[in-house]
Length: 439
Image 1 (cartoon, rainbow, N blue to C red):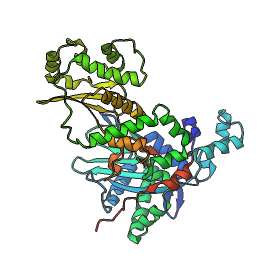
Image 2: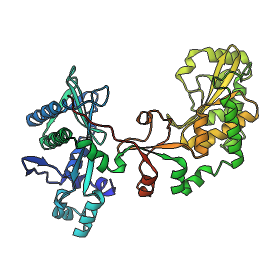
Image 3: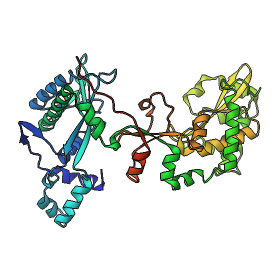
Image 4: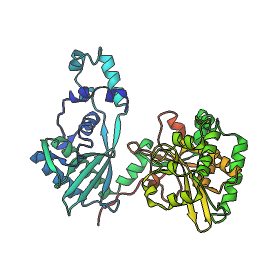
């Protein structure tokens, strides 16, 4: 959605929500639906309070979930998923020009119309609808665009009753239409044919993506040379011959030796603080929750082993040596068994790929007993054979592995606006999940 939708919630609040009766059906236009979605989204996520609704809304929700029982669930949590569409409608459904003019939101009707079309550029919009019900505890939830908009939870205190009967009636009518199409055998065919690509799931090859955005390829490789890629390929092939990590071991290890391994990675990636001791470099760049690692005798193998065998370090992050987010940090784990110590380097996110590869090469060059997690995946990335997962709008492009069963995909994105047609043409689009009626 463009800047003007976020520009003024007040503008949306000025929408004159009205009921359009056509063939005895409640028709809402896209701006009205987005209004409801914006004021209802995630309102039920409070740990104590759940939304409450007026009597008419509760009646419609009962009707909605009764209808949904005819549709086969798509997952073990009994969720049902459908696609609805809506029309943009006349500009009057977007806002009241006279009021916006008086409030200084717009200075002309041309500006008003431009804001309307920026906010809702498409004549037809699509809405992902998901409903979940747990009859045992009486729990219900409705999601629109993957955001919770309605929740009924008897375990929570009820808040102020909302009259969203118009919105609930629209949901009921949409589900009725979908069921009619399912009975006629046309629903799945229509969705597969008409659903826009930004709402679909697809796969694009890294080389095709970078051919469309060559500047992103150049940016990615600016700190990784062809010689380093060749070295990385050689080390990855060597590691491939020892998949269970049997061969590389170091008999003893001290804290200082571990910090020196870290310093190699910092140095090759041009981190600041090169003049500091390895331990102080570790303090500067690691997560900070080292669980006492920096306080033991740095040159004592016995103290390091004693520290390592103390389970308390597990609650910290001593091996997060290049701090970052949950999936964007670099770790240098230590493993130990009866044969000695080995290291496991991990940093698979796209934004840390080059750093991780250079870190790995530096460790291999000094003979460190190191293995690289996801080495094959990182090799695919730098040789541009990697597959990128495209996930629908409304889904955060992270931890989406389950959407691509049978494929080792770890980098995800939503379909960009820029060069969209070129990306669409190069993408392998997965079929939409089939919706079925229960027999």
